[in-house]
Amino acid sequence: MKVAVVGGTGSFGQAVAKQLVAAGIEIVIGSRDAERAKEAAASLGAQGASNEDAVRGVDLVLLAVKSEAAVETARELRAAIGTTPVLSVCAELRFGPGGVKPTTEATSIAERIQAELDAPVVAGLHSLAAASLADEPPDEDALVCGDDAEAKAVALELAARLVSGNAIDAGPLVSARALEGMTAVIVNVNKRYRAHAGLRVTGLPER
Ligand SMILES: NC(=O)c1ccc[n+]([C@@H]2O[C@H](COP(=O)([O-])OP(=O)(O)OC[C@H]3O[C@@H](n4cnc5c(N)ncnc54)[C@H](OP(=O)(O)O)[C@@H]3O)[C@@H](O)[C@H]2O)c1
Image 1: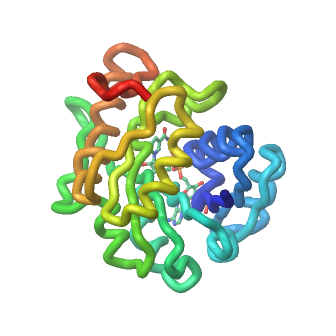
Image 2: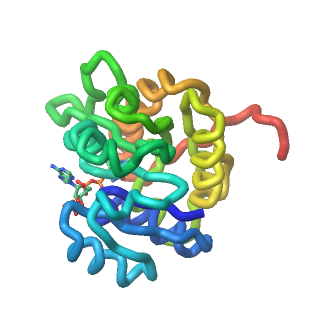
């Protein structure tokens, strides 16, 4: 599998890319600046390119840009992405007194990204923290949702390489609203308990 990480110079993109390279997946780090992408990719044993070049000829585009820029970035990359499946990991957070809160937007970022693209969009990995991916795959589950079965299967295959727990199908793309909101929950838990919390879903059949 070949995966482009758009915004792969950021902390989450770097952490995910490092794990995926270790798992034998071919990675292209994308950036608005091709030179920055090449520098960020070199230490990982990955390729680097502009976001637009990175997304061409891959099996999956992992959209890991700063959340405020996610919808606009998808719009700009529409032609280059074509019909290649996109996995959005983005979640909007509001920081303020009383803790971290999810966005008040009516729809998830993933659904707004879907509205910009010809490609099927899936959403997931929101409960994984960059810090938890620093070494071995963490003892966590990774949840992925989406409406396109083939795109979701590719994203679940990738998710399974990132965690030692389960890669879990969390249903249709509208579930992204809940998954994106889970990021705020985890950040609050981390702050309260000075932890690197993650999710495990219980009651699943043995695999
Ligand atoms: N950090 C985590 O633990 C974590 C966990 C789960 C999900 N996520 C999600 O993963 C995404 C990335 O998180 P992060 O912490 O890695 O974010 P980040 O470091 O703030 O940003 C990631 C990359 O986004 C690109 N970027 C910044 N502003 C941009 C703009 N205006 N237009 C286009 N690209 C822009 C930058 O790449 P270039 O400057 O090289 O283009 C940057 O390196 C977020 O959407 C977040 O919600 C993060």
